[in-house]
Image 1 (tube, rainbow, N blue to C red):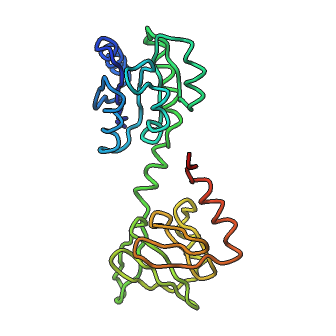
Image 2 (cartoon, rainbow, N blue to C red):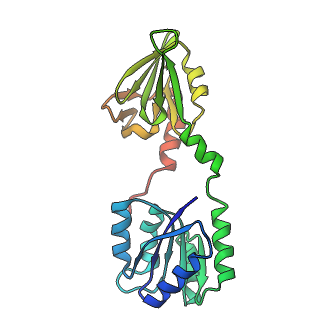
Image 3 (cartoon, rainbow, N blue to C red):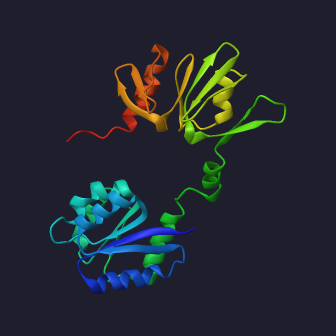
Length: 242
């Protein structure tokens, strides 16, 4: 398992020392180093998230504490590495995963990082995502159509069959809506919004009142008895406007 990391520090020797420490753990791979926090944020926004961000706090321009709100969006773990112990409380106040005091010992580094790696999703969970597929019977006896979970936009229940709307097709299979929801088994990815509709949360484009708009522009109504659970789902994932 390769874990991607970036290092942010305005002192070249500190970057070199920290990079050397990452070699103690074969799973860590430093993909980029930065002497400017804003440049690191630009990189993450353009290239996507990493597993670890190791960042100094006392930086020119945008300091580590002020940058934490953005950095946390683009990593599993944010570890502050600082020569100043007085910043520790501020660091944990912005949900830092760990705080390492310079000079960082090899033992302390390995212990902290190992503790965090243990919190990552297990290989079994990662494998589950790879296996997120369904096979729908085709027109002939031995014909089966593979459907990736990520391709499913929503599922509509009609009498004794359902229609699966994907990015490319409409597929029909003869089972009930409750049965297919159990078959999917991913309550984090599929959500029932009324008696006859299951939507993929990956394809939600907008929620407006009691209507959900999906990536194929389909407007679907949220049933009265399903609104409370759906609103709770949305609120848990809503960023407050500052």
